[in-house]
Image 1: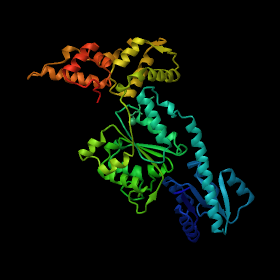
Image 2 (image 1 turned 60 degrees about the vertical axis):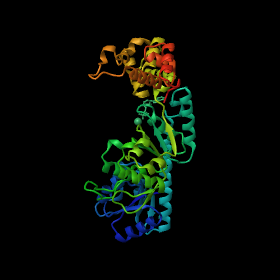
Image 3 (image 1 turned 90 degrees about the horizontal axis):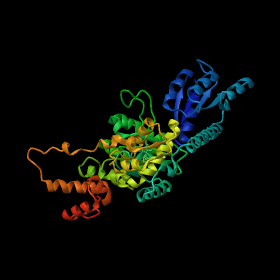
Image 4 (image 1 turned 45 degrees about the vertical axis):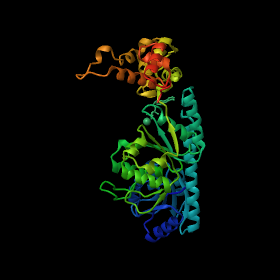
Length: 455
Ligand SMILES: Nc1ncnc2c1ncn2[C@@H]1O[C@H](COP(=O)(O)OP(=O)(O)O)[C@@H](O)[C@H]1O
Ligand SMILES: [Mg+2]
């Protein structure tokens, strides 16, 4: 296990020194403590394994062992003792001590025992993660939709997941499924038994985001009383999802770029490089090319992130998926709310397909959730989605500005907007404007628009 942290607890400085030197040479991070109490104080720094002297000045090894296991049942403990009686050995084993090393010990033996012990925890953690993952609903099929756009998306996601660790950039409006796709990629990849960590770049102030990502050394800043591992270290072997990357400040962008290029970083306040193997998936609802043009996002980072771009389609561009999505959510909420909704009326589907869905699939999901909570029938009807109608504007709500308008220009703009929203489908665009197909065709010709104006 690379980067494992080992805590050496012994009151004899010479023993601590010789063990530390050896373990550091083996590539581990080493912490030291002289007493049982000092050992327990070190735990929040993130300890994987403890080499524990049985005889300590303030307490005995077995009671420290008990407290260590209370703090984290996964911590491995190797008991060092010159006087292991059968009883203490049995008790220590019951409490979960991994091994004894008799004093005086042979450094090669200790080193081998440490390696074996760490390998067992890694396996144990992997098995546990595997079990929880298997129960998680993040297979490819959890990306619902049979439109050409969604079918292509699933194919791309499957290919990206099995490709090597390249960085992925997910772009798309809020609610289009970026979080979902990030998880599907992770759980469909070879990394699925390792951690999936996510962080929303806009949610934290700059300094906090930096130490969350990269970790910090003790004393790196006023509140840094203890050393702390960052997300990148915790996700070693797995995936880190950086949501809303467009909001990251330039100083951090530079640090992230260095990590992506060199696979190495320093903790805040740290001097040594830490190497980890992490796949980064970034997401944004901003147009990063525009952000680059405006000087708000580093172009080198953009190009580095954009190795595998995945553009999530807005729901209004594939309304043909709405029935399937609605059925999927109805099934989910039937289970969750113990309801028995069997279907959705055609009139209701018509309402749902006419609506523009600025909040995309998230909004659709919320609308179905609300309808199911409020309805006590076995079928969802158009009236269950009446609130969607109220977002349409009536003629009186358009008020003529003081200086008047150019009616032709406004008409042209509305036709273009409707075509865009309908993904170029003229029938649907016509419905958005209360026109029939002939009427919209006439206007498309009149304004010299391309019949498939969709972008
Ligand atoms: N194609 C899809 N199939 C099934 N559920 C989806 C799909 N796209 C989005 N969702 C669901 O919609 C909600 C919002 O998606 P999310 O991934 O959080 O969007 P984003 O991160 O782009 O804002 C989530 O509950 C997600 O599971
Ligand atoms: Mg999201």
